[in-house]
Length: 197
Image (cartoon, rainbow, N blue to C red; front, side, top):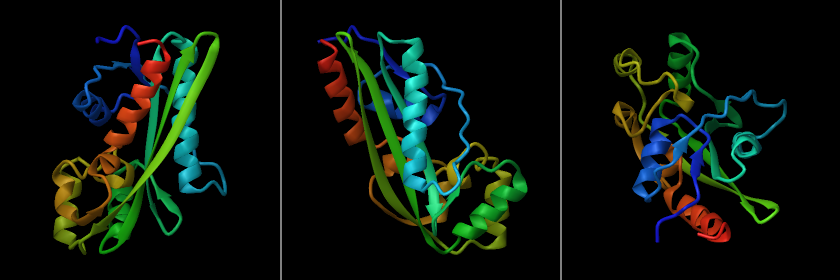
């Protein structure tokens, strides 16, 4: 049965759009432009949870008739969140920090929908662990020169050329890319069924 409820993705990430299409959802894209500054003393997991909820909430206020999905991904090593690099120097520094080590990639997903007069929401968090090979200066400079690190948490895209940096992934690859597919499919099924689809 075809859904009559809009599914809205509160993100402009082409990776999340593509992942949603893999599980049968052609979502409308309405980015949530919010302040993504991590709070002082906020853990990586709490940070992505809050970001996913805030993104979904902002867009659901604008689209109360829709099932809205917000997501956020961060790279964390030794309790430090490594976000999107602002420039080449930050990209190089981040990749040097991750070189030869295993880091966590946390992705939080929040789905908000309306059931009758009630607003309902569910949030999940999935974590994968990624091990990088020791990065030579040549490899590091080559990768930064591709331009791929920019706009990516942790300064790399494992589904792209950044895949050569990793030697091991423990957990779901889709979590590293930005949307844990199995869990997201479950949340959307729940929300759509609850919305009367």
